[in-house]
Image (cartoon, rainbow, N blue to C red; front, side):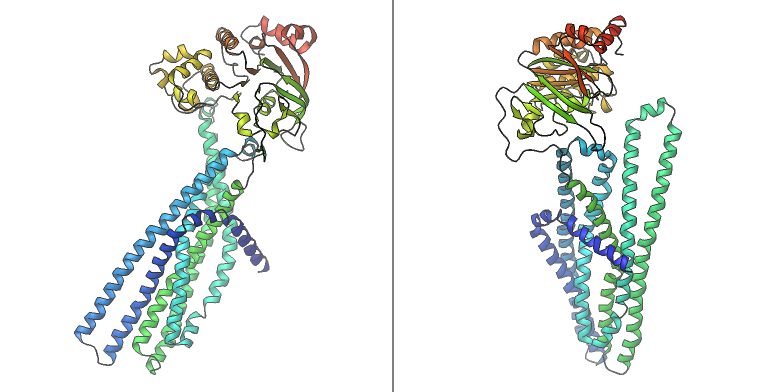
Length: 594
């Protein structure tokens, strides 16, 4: 028992902590909420008047004072009260349930704002399916708890309190008898809600895994079909689905127990009132009208008693889901804005690394170790074996991952003292994994500069040597590329991504193996275009092939997380065996990147 109560206390603390997320939204709509609950209070008070009218009518019948006209007046009064109840009920449903939808919208927007603020380390830890589940099942659970759940809770408290007061006015002892089973209901609810929280958490986690599995399956559907893994993948999904259903059934056992227990206790209270209240009526302690009114008030209490289980379920789901959402909202990006950023230097193309060391995990060996490098305006090429740290170097230069103080400088200013958005606004980055949206070619290129003129888009496409191929398509720049650009070749996708970066016309461009799928002739055209475009800019290009970087101002050879050599193409042919080996191999086997 102590363990159960301790778990409940922990849940309450967790609910309070996560509930702070909702406070700004409640304050924003406080007038709407207040008016809604006033309308709800009106419904409850009006409902409490009806038993008094019925009592008056029955007492007039009992004592031979009733007439047809008086009964008609009583009936008309009940109809009028019912009409007022209907109007107030419409008002509170419109205001409070409408508020719950506004809360859902605002919270969804806040989740998205936080997600776009977070950086790569967060998304390395959290799969996309889990994040998608937050905006699905979890957000719906919070909306239900803050909408109909909150209304039912407040309604139950107000109705129960008022009904008890009216019942006590009729007969205090009979009221105590009617309330005698309530402690049992409270005890059962406390025991079951602790178990409910645990099982619902497990169900939500499984739903996240199901969502992630579905997302990854759809994303890799062509690979799955190519390897004939349809049956195996369906089998995995079926097993996960069965586990999800199994745990949902275990959750349903707890949920299903709450409502019958509540109903049983409510009916037991009714039994006590019928027996003892009937005896009081027989001996004349209370009138028949009092007895009927007392029964009516007890019926008004029956719904709150039976709703305890349902409301508890809604709140448990909401608390669990809100806690999952809150764990994302309290995340902080690893790459942060400085408290007081320094102004960007006027000449901002000189990038300097000083003894840069970086690892993705604290316990793992660093990916880059002691890198010292000066990248001047012009063309810098980077080569190295797979796993040498080339992509990590590009991501650090693009401010995707954090770096320690005094290891990365723009001109002579520590990059950690510069505004993050300011630095990123001066860098165009073409990642190794090309990402296109399921939209038109024009929209994909213009993503980096919404509102760019058609002439600017075409100029960027010409620089990337993709314009002629685009206009040869039936719909030209309005051609839709399919999911992740599936309707295009690998080389076309890379060049559209390159055109997207060039459209920004930023002073620094970082290309991480962005020409690996391009044929040799097209590659030469792109490099020639680059030479005309490059003056006054800084370009860092990673390549597994030597050909794109032959004319680089400096070439950096990475090995085992450090710089093995640097120099021009001619200098490295003489000084570095690795560079000479890959150059000779690729020149003797043109078209390969090995």
